[in-house]
Image (cartoon, rainbow, N blue to C red; front, side, top):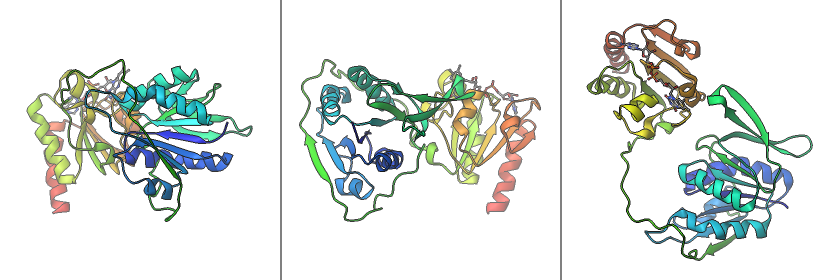
Length: 319
Ligand SMILES: Cc1cc2nc3c(=O)[nH]c(=O)nc-3n(C[C@H](O)[C@H](O)[C@H](O)COP(=O)(O)OP(=O)(O)OC[C@H]3O[C@@H](n4cnc5c(N)ncnc54)[C@H](O)[C@@H]3O)c2cc1C
């Protein structure tokens, strides 16, 4: 039992997983194998970033889901017998991980924020528990150890770290017909913005009285050269913004230089999503709002009075 396997649907996510995967493989001296759809880039980039073997998944027909690969992947992993399998914790990745762990009759640690071998070589993962109020350290007793890792938890391994490095490439033929077929696809409303990569995030919460007032936050975000994000009530209950702009436990994790919350109370499930923020600022009219305990800078005031002044000041400074 040796080696580390990585599975992700996108090149960028594979490169991120190669960071912890590479460290683990180097420590135990095993092979580093990645599994990725054929369309996701040149294998040479993965070799240069540390992979030893690239397993390409050939394209699937329109009505076939990624889940069709499960029996094939389970067979491949059983045959290779790796120490650990790391997957990106995207919606699809999480589904594949759970179903794969069940097939392989092993354990799965989800949404891991770190992985490290302890003194006796046991792989220990850290993940948030109780809505982000506690950090849990877990070890998987079955083999392989399976773990999902949220996007942007690790920096991507440099795609040209070791230029000219070579490895083996295999392409898996299309899998046999799946028990699930896609009968229709309907595009979910999504924002084209990627707030997980934004340097500045202006986040709106329930302090906003009506949908049209989003414009105020948009103006501030534009003045700061940033993006707009929101709390869960804004996306999930009011549907004022798409789900992929919701920050927190059930949304995305952001790591901006500046997070600015407007009318956000700062519940733990939201704060979990901004642990990586460098500077946290908040505008809230309630001096006891929990956001002020997490904030580096706070303004106690009405966002409808404060925001226009902020826009004016930022424009003066940034020109
Ligand atoms: C399992 C689970 C997962 C969850 N996941 C998430 C998640 O991923 N992301 C998330 O955000 N939430 C999540 N939640 C919900 C979370 O617990 C909170 O309910 C939510 O974050 C509160 O959103 P809010 O701050 O916008 O609203 P509220 O808590 O209602 O706060 C509104 C704030 O605005 C202030 N305010 C009102 N008017 C003004 C004004 N004019 N000027 C200035 N301030 C004003 C108020 O003082 C108040 O503090 C989750 C909950 C559960 C149970």
